[in-house]
Image (cartoon, rainbow, N blue to C red):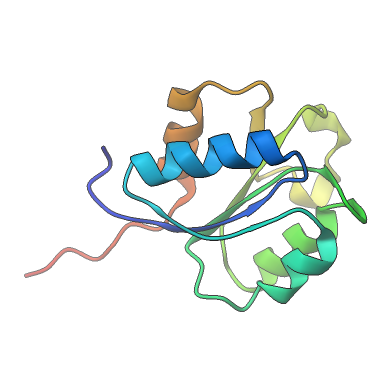
Length: 123
């Protein structure tokens, strides 16, 4: 357990994978703000109060690289969760974390812990 809750957007067009992601994250105490399957839906949620996002690359409407760019502009960290190869990611987005499908729960949670902003300590 990380000890702090993270508000997460999931962009995943396979309902069973989206359900698994949501269940793993919520079991760990995180808040899944939205689970969306299309680029259009993802764009609608970009201004939600998000700590990070998990993006499949190939989703309804095309590739999620535009959503990733928009998250970068908003300073919202994200990771790709994809069966694509990391080399398929444009050069400008290669600094993003990449979680290969099929993923292990431990790997997913570690990646979220790595990309999510830490809360400020209370003094």
